[in-house]
Amino acid sequence: MRFITLVAGIAAMTVTLFAGAAEPIVIKFSHVVAPNTPKGMGAEKFKALAEQYTEGAVRVEVYPNSSLYKDKEEMEALQLGAVELIAPSLAKFGPLGVREFEAFDLPYIFDSYADLHKVTQGALGRRMFEGLESRGIKGLAYWDNGFKSFSANTPIRVPADLKGRKMRIQSSKVLDAQMRALGALPQVTAFSEVYLALRAGVVEGTENPHSNFYTQRMHETQKHMTLTEHGYLGYAVITTEKFWDSLPGSVRDALERAMREATAYTNRIAKAENDKALAAVEAAGTTEIHVPTSDERRAFKKALLPVHRQMAPRIGSDLIEAIYEETGFDPEKL
Ligand code: LMR
Image (tube, rainbow, N blue to C red):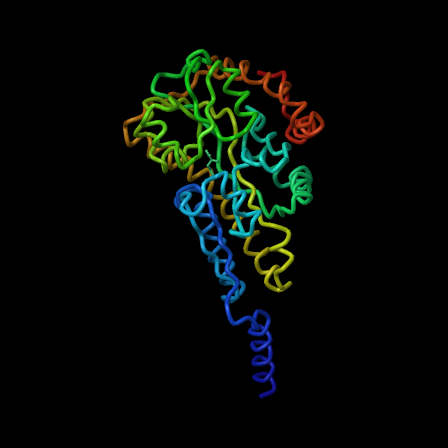
């Protein structure tokens, strides 16, 4: 009898942990990619876990595919409190006035996910999140996507093949410098407009992790892709300090747990999702996929590594050096 009373008491305590508010707290999570990508799947996983762990005290509404805001707008919407969660690519933090994140755009700086994780899951990743605080932004997690390959309508074997080509980039000064180092003409285009821009010939080529390339149907518009894997594209999941601090402690704890688990999930599936997407591009048969020879790879590396030194005054040479140290990257080694 006493045992039953005790169990009932614990159950009541659990119920009351999140009780009190008549209406659930709504978290709008806006992003620009398709639901069947690492970020899209991570957002859905977070929603499921957050609603479960808060026992319905929080409702997460996920808006994929730029259905609520495009890339530039989502950053503004977050700051204005129109959405509570976004996960922009690390290339898109420049407008916030934090240039450190552009280090992730440096060509070839990460050889593998394992090297990348030494930064995103370590002290440097935390230091970069601390840099957001003065802007009222709270970094919650780093989510992986993958390594980018160049695509165009003409074959890409050597850097000179991109000379004079109009190449779509995300809004990042490092990516601008990267394309210019190849003699290409970079054009900043919102992600939601890339497919149409490629189809209309407004831009002639681009760079993407394979999951984004496939789910935006870019294979319908690009005849050639070379698996250069010359740079990384991933995300920081962010909210505002104001929103996060306004949450009851029990809700915040539950959301942190949901975010931890959604992050582990996303980073576990990212590579497989990109491999699956590449296989789907191959199966579609509309894009010829070229695996560069080691000489071709070296030629791209040689053309692009000078971007590190060129961008050091902007990003901070101490940060770049710290990343090299963490990953063992040698900028002299081709
Ligand atoms: C892009 O604009 O290419 C990417 O940032 C889109 C994304 O969120 O993966």
